[in-house]
Each structure stands twice: as C-alpha cells, then as structure tokens.
Length: 198
Length: 177
Image 1 (cartoon, rainbow over the protein chains, first blue to last red):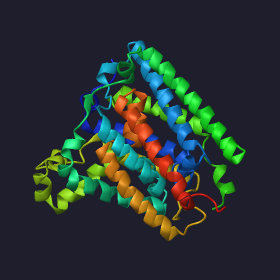
Image 2 (image 1 turned 60 degrees about the vertical axis):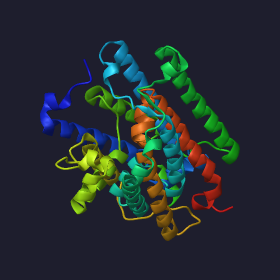
Image 3 (image 1 turned 90 degrees about the vertical axis):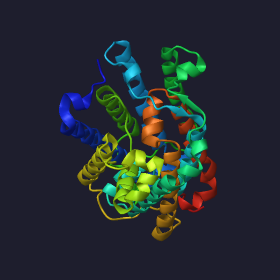
Image 4 (image 1 turned 180 degrees about the vertical axis):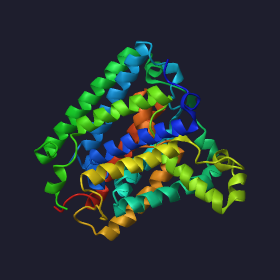
C-alpha cells in the first residue's frame, strides 16, 4: 500500500530523479498558471485577478479528494503520509509576516523560483531577500526558541478539531472553496464591474 | 509588456489548479509527503553558510541539525525538488517565449523601487517561512490538502496579513487613480 519507501524501491539516484520530476511538474504548472509574474500574484489582494485563490483552492480540493478516495479504497495509508504538525502560534505569526512579505515583495518562495528561472529581476531581488531572511532566522532562532516551540499540538487534523467525520470535513472544505470562488468573484464584480480577464 | 499580450498565454486557473492538485496527490501517493519550496532554498543557503563558517554552523543547534559535522544539508528531497521547480519553470517560460530579462512592476513605480520592495518582502518571507516551518507550498497547499489544523490557521494568516496591508501599499501595484 502507498506511500512507498522510495529509496528502498528505487535507490538514492532513482528517488532523486522522482523528486526532480515532481519539482519539474510543479515549476511548469506554476509558470504556466501565471505565477512567475508578481503583478498577477499581487492582483489577488486587490481583487483585480483571482488566480491565486482559484489555482490554490482548486489544487487543495482536488488533492484532498484524491487522497481521501485513495485512502477509502485502501490504496493509500493516510496514517503513513506526512501531515504537517501543528505549532499553532508560530504558524500564525509566521503566516502574518509572510502575508506582509507577499504584498510588499510580490512573490512567495515557490513562485519566486519560477520567476527567477524566467529571468525576472524582481524575482531575483526577492529570492536574494529570502536567502537573507532564512539566514537571519538561523542566527536569531536561539532568542525565540521558546516561542518557536510553543503551542505544539502534533499531528492534528480538522476532523479532530471539530469532532466531525473526515468525510463531512472533506465535504465542508469543498463547500468553502466554492463559496470563496463565488464570494471573491462577487466582490471583484462590485469593484471592477467584471470577472477575471480572459 | 502590455496586459493584452500577457493574458492570452496563461492557463485557465481552474485547469492549472486541477493539474497542481493531481501532482500534489501523486507526491503524497508516491513519496508520502507534499510539495515544498522555502525549505529547499533554506538548505541551499545553509550549505553555503556551512562552507564559509563551518564552526559557526556546528555551534548552533538549529543549523547543526541540518549541516553540522558531516551532515550534508543538500542530501534532502526538497533540494532536488527546488532544482526541478527551476527547470520546470524555465521550460514552461521557454515554450511560451517568456524567458527574458525584465522587471515586473506596478505602473506607478520604477523598476528600482520594485527591486527594493522585492528584496524587503523576500526577507520577511524567508524569516516568516522558517518561523512557520513552511511556506505557501509546504504549509498552505500540502498541509491544507491533508487537513492539518496548523496549515489552515497558517493559510488564513497569510491572506489576512496580505489583505490587511494591501490598501496601504496600493501604489506599489494598482494603476493610478
């Protein structure tokens, strides 16, 4: 049953090729979706274009449904896949800082990579800043260690939080995505009198 | 580059999103974990740091866990994935004639101003991503799809931070009144 122990199955080189391949697909999709262009990413925060919301939530819903179905069919062991563990407050504060970084810098880490790959100078400055930021974190983490390791909740998923069956939560997430597509689209029409260009 | 020439060449966002969802599922199915980006950049940065000041890296518990002694920070899936992202982005851009040296900036600011803000935003993004233990790819997208509570809280925080500040910095991105 999936997931597989890649290194045991394919060897080190084989597993590296798989990761290169997954990365290739990821970069190709990001660039093809317009995410190498900071203006299109920032436009999300002014409701001018809703590409970020649409791509991201479609991806989350599709991946979630496939993971859920594959587990239900006994093809994939949900207990064996990596669910990001929760450190609630470091995640929220880090997220807020990144939101500010996003609107000032115009990219997130992944999108800045495809921007650099297509020779966008603003992406290069962003990536340079990103490197400075991670090095700064490495130098200062000693001072904020207590906070960084606070509010640890382990592998904690939404069905446990709400006390609901996982199938119900999956359904609710699909509803949330549809509601956001409609709601954001409605605000967009209110402001600009049109939907996404195209 | 005007807006008209831009918009004919990108995928429909729902199609791009669906493909990304399938890829994310395949990543979970084959490897057991989702996608990532900032962690790879972090490891490459720490690898360079380890070449320049190895004693310093060994002394910091956080850095030593990645690059202390004989540990090679580059021997990790996320580094390979980040390299793949660059190649994939380049290939996509090449096919659509988008690989060219240029600066994307809002109509009201100069490229130079854009560079300064991109650099500053990048610093915050790098710092925040380490604090949150992941970025938009690793936390929001990958953790969100498998229903991690922390990832959902993170995702709303990113959007909240961006939307809260957007109006005040609209001159960076919006057309003039």
